[in-house]
Figure 1 (cartoon, rainbow, N blue to C red):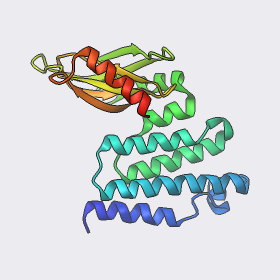
Figure 2: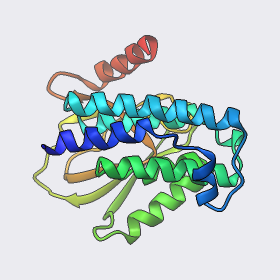
Figure 3: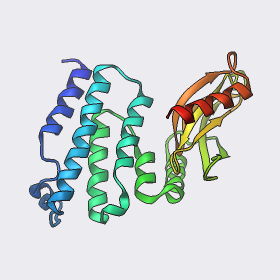
Figure 4: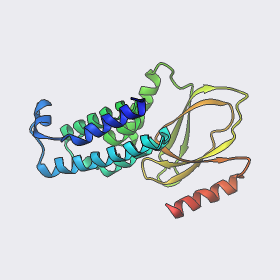
Length: 219
């Protein structure tokens, strides 16, 4: 069995289970939530698992897979759940992400604690990791002014800044254009979702901004 086949099997097996059954709540030492909530959560996670299975089958990129998680998180309003329910939901996301060998802690923190506190937690995690960022780039969102953060993990003077990045703010879903500039060898995105890369050989700054407008209109 290949790695992809193993992942699909694990995701499929999880989908077949009642992930928020009374037994599962009891195992956590909690009183089960209302049936309506449990049914809704099972439906949301079954949809997520279906999308992830297709993504693995089609050999989609990590960025695409992250966007699937992000969209599912947006379906779940934290205000609709109490603390124990949010923790259970978070643990389910983590379980699924580990099957895919992915780290979605940043998106999960922003979902659970909001963009401001979530960003602080994510920055603390970044600083405590084995290879902490050497610099943090920030740019205000054009709509909500939330600071869009990018973490530089490694610099290289000879590395050109060859592209613009179209991204979507986690706080308000607005599309923004980022230019990280030259000298960056390895970069990690912060509190936004990557949408599209625009090669500077093909796009001037004005053309790139026009492309962002097109994306806003289309999506």
